[in-house]
Length: 372
Image (tube, rainbow, N blue to C red):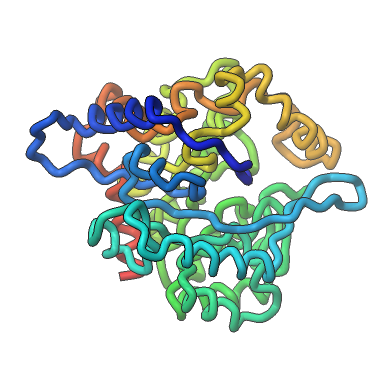
């Protein structure tokens, strides 16, 4: 989903979030151990870059796409990412982060921890900005882009999307585009893709691939969620997936809790190994803005999603034959989510070394394997 602009944190919330991060790391005033690496597999740069420190992030995959909402002939909303807007957003982000202490544009996995600030890997959430000109992939790479998602929900020139009545895989252009991503060093991301797109990308790619943000179909049967077959294929290729915060794709239970997120993480670990899973967000850094404003009242907040949900049902897209009751896990819809997740994993019996992997170590390993 695409974030609205969010308000700046006040000093009290910033300090509280910092305390939560310290607690999750086991840090006291005189802690001698190195803090745990925390990485977010998909989020957005906040207006106030200090929020990256409050969130405890040492690295993140950052979607910098600029979108335009359009309506198809049936009035269903679609999200268009043009070359002009996304190209400008790439340059603006690189300029914004130049010389900043809070974050920097990361070009290699080995950049994580190499200097102060959050190592920020720039991503477009669709190949739409490439159009039919594959030379743009190398140009985007030269200018700082490191991750490129094939499609966002719907079919495009490169690949089949997840939210279509009939699934399709990579197109001939998509196959060429994947080879070019491999050649120049841009990581392919299959999030939002159809199952054929994901499996074909895993089979054809010369490098590991990512499913940067998603959930498990075995738990919530929805095309936006990944089957065990997909999860294994990505892991067998050396890649991984991030579990995101969108609660209606984490559980159909009426009240979402941290335990539902832990169950998703455990499922991926059981299917493909603990090295195959990490944490993603898919919301703004301080949480889904409208839900934060509503004090995480899911019954009220879910209403903004229902027109889109019903439109998908009207299009007879699989998985929309029920009505969600929530959007967020309240305990996680805030700047301190990473600390809370780490604490929940410890409480659930995950070994400390495995918590390290889930919270950031796996992202670091995969990004370094691919990008150096």
